[in-house]
Length: 391
Image (cartoon, one colour):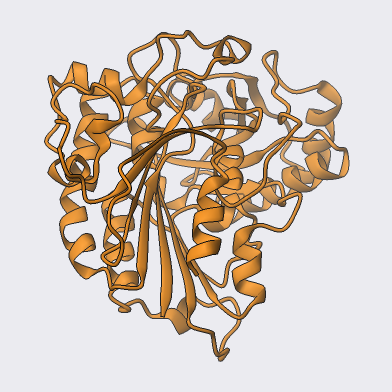
């Protein structure tokens, strides 16, 4: 079996893109650098030996003389700084049109249509906001009216938050599906509709990560994932991968509630211990000997980047590094592991939104020697090219 394993450390950017000002970002943004500085270094021996510290000066991540991986800095071609744009480019799609954003909230005609088709009675907010802040602010009104909380950010997202002790989770998902259809049919070109369920725990509105769902716009063209699937191979999505690609090109999928769960499932997938028949979209199929395992590790972004928590961000990276010990050991000779990111979300600069950044790319296989530093490469889609050549 020839396999490629892609692990995306969500939002672990490594420096501002030249056009960052077009996305309202400052040239000083550098997610990993600032997380390292805040924590006075990170304990990441596996990422270190793979060459992460050789890419630039990160406090506490040493440069090593003979890294085990090939490493590079990737510069995004697409116009965007969001999850969908980054992941699609990793899989081979380059967007020449940025997804729409709504800095003043969504148009009234869109909101009116959403209210009519969902029969939800009304909505709250309709503005850019931090998710944790907006549910705390509007929780009492939400309980009084039962209206969903609709908000966006600097990214192309239509987010719907409800307390699932008040509004059933199934209803939230149904409302998201309706929003996705409206946005697509009316060509608003919104990247994602996101279900943001929460509960009031110990008096505080608390988001329930495991029940989050992303309803992405369908990929505008076939990706590497479609190529492998159409050729009879397996494409296993772990975390929100199936949502990001709207299930296109995926054969098996499993959602996760945390990075820890995603890392454990990735390890099981590598060791061929996942119950694949249970996770398959189509039961009873036979597959070729080509496989992609695609994992998104979202905690760095969702829990720590957006919440301006560099301490938590650092611990999340260290947790990923701990799991790399058994993951690297479990790799077979015909496996290629690629560790990368999809954008930035610098917790140490003003704001709570994604940042337009370059990303690291670490490429490792037991059967290949390191080619050292490949330098700065234009396009996250080089990853799709490497994998296509590999498998």
